[in-house]
Image 1 (cartoon, rainbow, N blue to C red):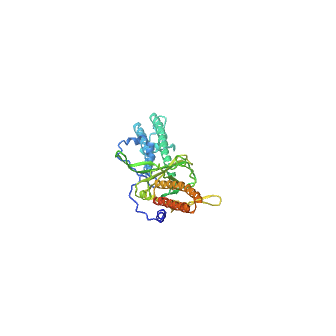
Image 2: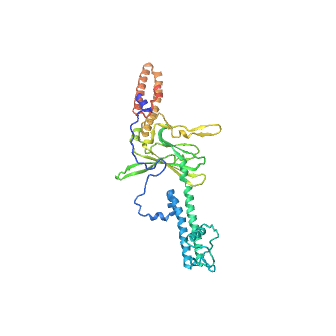
Image 3: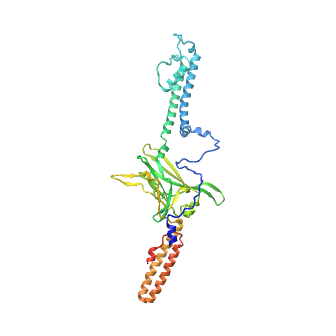
Length: 405
């Protein structure tokens, strides 16, 4: 019994953990994957809008400035060529001459007129005349193309500013995942929370286990993905994320951790990626937040500290203890061994209790001698049951109720 209690105690010394695994997804949700040797780069230009939105801010601002500056310079140069070709620059002092654009006396004036035309400022000092048909055509063309450039670039900047990944920055995940008992079953748990008062609508949670795997045919898969059930069958993966929630993965026969004990889990090499999706209540855009947990960030025998308290007329969430955990008594065996030990204990109690009732009836009829023999047999049966329980390697506490019988 002392060995069982020692195995059940959370204060046992932990073996050194394995370190050095490269993350597939960073803690802030950024995917640690870079695309290399992409030969078909023209595909980025087929979706130019998304390409500009995905660029870094400094590059997006550079393209934004260049898009306007180059179009102003391009059409300004054409306005100057028209004035030069018609001879307007040679008749600047001739009042009888009707130029294409009044008061256009050089390239700078042509550039300013291009800006006024495309931005519809219209100062009135430089005005196109009706004696220049090529200028009228150019004016229409610049007005149309200028509106297209304006709509494209302003749309890109608006989408980039209102990207939903900025909303994902206020969705937080616990720094560690924990493994402990819930309703007598081992569960892998982590916590999620929303820092904003505006909620995520139709929020759902998923979890992926990523580790290397070798098939029966010898094929090596370095980043094999396996689903971790977090309530898809029961609907528990649909979250009402008003206050922080603890997401639980029950380690059952369908779980990849079914045969993983505490020491086996610490020697393993894997990464758990969690994905939270939903719609932003303010904009209606889809938002996705991601995080990950390595082996070093999975604490066996821990539970999350409560962060919710009832105040005067409202609930208050204390995010100062959002990442805090505390140790709880947890068996160190695997979930499969725990289930088998529980099944054997249930079977032993099921057969031992009726037999002892029969022995008690026989004892009343047969006398004290037969009663003593029945008690000895019952004691041997209880000793065998305790011996079976001791074989569980700390999976279950000693059956105190049985020893009292």
